[in-house]
Length: 92
Image (cartoon, rainbow, N blue to C red; front, side, top):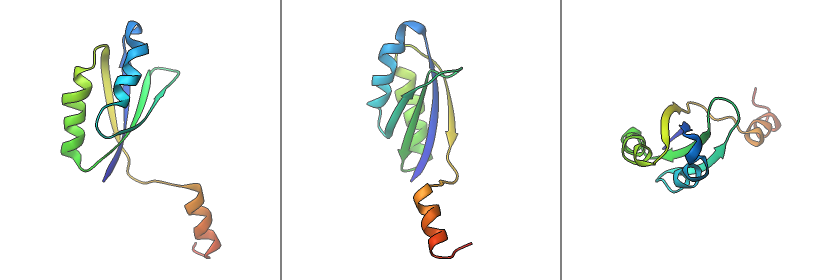
């Protein structure tokens, strides 16, 4: 299983429709609107890189109003509860 973050820019006219459309794409688990130079950040969880390529090339490319995407693969995950549990066990 891989996790990735998709940074998506959209036209001004499509801001109200792109987010909900992103949320229906396969593998997308969360979509956020953001401030700054990116309009949306979508968190995805997929089986492999081929599924990620299909999502970006076949699904995102077909959403009207999407003008640019950037994909960032997650490498490590840090969860506050897991870190706290490790310290409780004496793991340094």
